[in-house]
Length: 316
Figure 1 (spheres, rainbow, N blue to C red):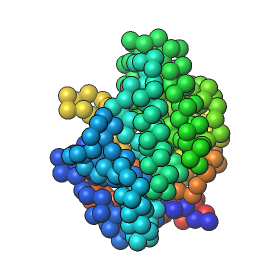
Figure 2: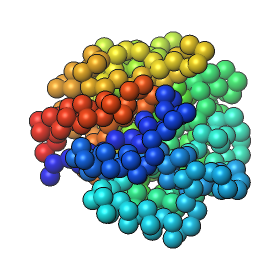
Figure 3: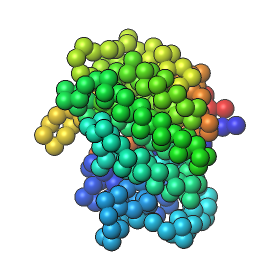
Figure 4: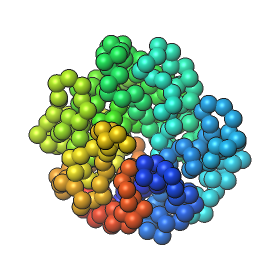
């Protein structure tokens, strides 16, 4: 069976698009016209989301707190002939590492998981929320214990709703060394908990060691990192890398830059077969991620063509 294609909707709502986001209906219509099978939902305004994590949904764009609203969204996607490949849950306003009480984080994850159940999403994305520098303030072992404890609970919630959890490790968040990734995955130790492997993040984390605290932990190529993560990957994002990070408004490195296919240095004819061999995905989605790319809307068609080519070679 050939892979199904999707793209992260957040590419059109944050970063360069934050002041002029592209509405969800327009996104879906364009993706359908380009031949995408689905969309990976950024579950935060202005696109569909479970609602305001901090109070009233009034004035919160895209809020869908009721089952009726969610049923309408599910029907709308069916009308498009499309599906959801996953959810990037809006957990960034919560505390995870810098608190010994993750109750609110877990509660918000549960709300996102229930939203996913209602609209037919099987995979829920998480990350470490706080930046790598948090380890300067919180003891390393304490920080890791907090993450593991919370994610064990999240994995159980997701399992009850028939879902899997994918942790997207990346330069912009804590525990971005390969050994950290393996250690946390092993400690969570839940069958529905795995790693979301983004080829751009794989380059920046595994080869460049971007934003790693202390001594860098890197490999000669992504192939070594992928081999290290064999059997742990449950979700795949494909996009190029130019060995650079996206910059904050202050000019500081934030996270991977996500340039379109062909505008970076990655050899996908090496990387994709290795990923196919190493991944254990409970689904057939391959997803494009153009997060923070200035011309994501324009680049979408080019990226879809490139992804189709990779599927033709390696996605059967």
